[in-house]
Length: 217
Image (cartoon, rainbow, N blue to C red; front, side, top):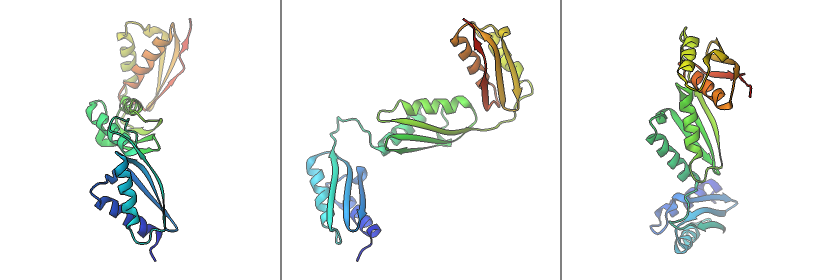
């Protein structure tokens, strides 16, 4: 008598063997000889073909069929399709080091992991993943590599502040502690606070920014 795991492998092999079935979007689960089919196919005849192929496998006691017909014009929201589109977006975006990142999608929820050299690369990857149709949420586990922090990092940040047309650099304080930058002081609007924070993140070696700037209207 076949074990459930062996029966699952046999059913998956039979679906892959059947030329009228695209098995890429079909899931197979087995419990006490009962086979549950799930996922998507492109037509109703393909759905029937998947069921018939499963019935041909020795050891199948019953079939619980939950395959849905999804036409070519319908949005592609299967997990592996979402993952594929995210990887494509990473590859097209020069700001994202796609070779350093991995993507997992489970029921529409995306988890990105890996290591990058800059915070903006992590943030760009998160934003790109969130723009893909079918994504329900993104968990960003990307780590920013701890690079040697230049001794003049504070000066670099202050110079970046001074280059901003809409920010009074003298109103912002900068304290560095290793890879951590602590911002303080007062600005006149929320967008100025954002400018200061982005400038701090752009400094080499920065792994954390504590933004304590107060917006004084």
